[in-house]
Length: 112
Image 1 (cartoon, helix red, strand yellow):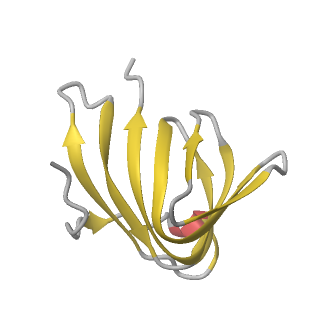
Image 2: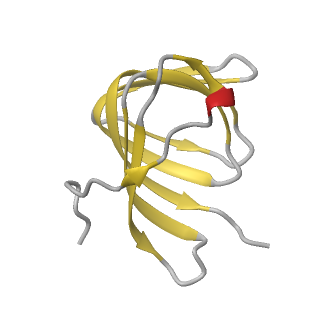
C-alpha cells in the first residue's frame, strides 16, 4: 500500500540548475524492487524553475498544483491535478513548478 501522507526527505535541485525561485522539493520513495531499477513514490515542490536531464524513464501523475515542462527543442506541456505524462530517459529541458506541486512518480532506470 502506498501512503500519500509520508513527508519524505529533501530533494532540492542543485543551485547551479535553478533558473528562477528557490524551489524546495521533497521525495518519499514508497517502493523499490531489489535491483533498484524500478521505484515509485511521491514528490512535492514549491514554486521554481530549473534545468533537468533525465537518465531514467519517469511516469508521473500530478495530484496537486501545476507544472510546465519544456524540452531543449522548444516543445512545451502544462500539467494540472489529474494529468499524467511520461518523461523519457534522455530528456533535457526545463521543469517549472508554477503552483506548489505534488505528484506520484514511477521511475525505471536501467542499471548497466
